[in-house]
Length: 427
Ligand code: HEM
Image (cartoon, rainbow, N blue to C red; front, side, top):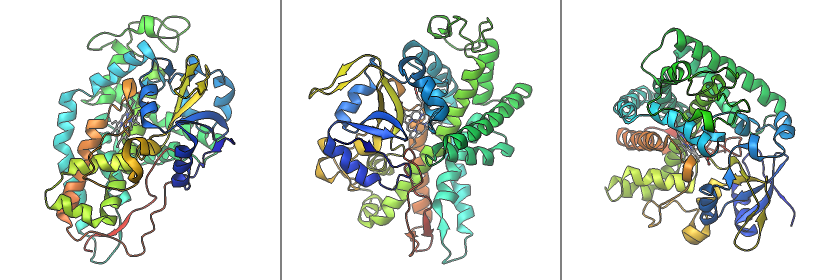
């Protein structure tokens, strides 16, 4: 069977999803020139996501890493050095550091602010002249998560817009490798500026906590950097210098890159997709309004039906892995987690997996991943999603899609949302 070539524009997602179902649990694909296996069957995907024989560390487990990285537009998804691309003990070390910074106290403090931020955004929208279409992706779905992550990380106002453009470009899979490299250079320049600012003026935010961990080794339960570092010199530091630091300068920068990117793009799609689904399924919205289901159910159903991260690059087989049915993933083979297809797969959701149904009995999904890399921001994303939806629909009971609204997909095979979401606030 011919290898399935994934469309970088994301325009063919439904047809590709149907192909992935048709072709079996693991499908040979071409991912912008890289040969990989797409896994869309949620049962198999769940197994592989927690299988220690599957790694996200391409540097160690992808034989083509050095050759692919300079010319592959998606290189950053495997080349950044943070928890996202780490495996085993190394992953636990890097995740624990950010987990500490995501402490319950910090997230609770954000929780209190989410309603306030949403309220202010809705006040702004309420000033729209009657009958004027408003793009809710731009004016709500983007703004809330960006403001939340900006507070969490302590981003200066001067950087929040440029981060937005840069993160958009990381998720835009139609860009060339040269454009991706240029964008990354800009991104790193901004992260260096952020780190320098916070080193000079530390504050009560996650960036300052990570810098403290880097500069003083100030970590709650101590780092296991020496044996888990994976660095050839055993120092645990990218620059090779000795010291008690819990993370290297490169890891510090790439961890910020990860949290900024995750915080800027994914929740945007959740809010956008959930609003679009409710506005195109008024009978479902009526169930929520009647109190028969909660806003949390809407969030889960939107995550299931339209996973904000459609495909997640990449994982690698650490050794040969034989799948049920006899297919063998060879050592070093790249694996793509196809979360959007998994969320609609007939093996778990029957034949109506593409239908938006807030009352469906099986609501569980893999939109936040599974296993050791399960999304660290899931509670925050759920909170933002439920708050934004509840307050929006309460404030604008006649909300409707703009009459000529065209819901075009974001140009990405990773990011799953709409380019714009034009609505009329007063119906
Ligand atoms: C990991 C989805 C929001 C931070 C992940 C993964 C997925 C995901 C699928 C696992 C990747 C894998 O397969 O390995 C989402 C979705 C979100 C969301 C759908 C919103 C609806 C957030 C937010 C943050 C965040 C708001 C931070 C503020 C992270 C981090 C990881 C991660 C740090 C890496 C975890 C690890 O590798 O151990 N996310 N995410 N995410 N997410 Fe999220």
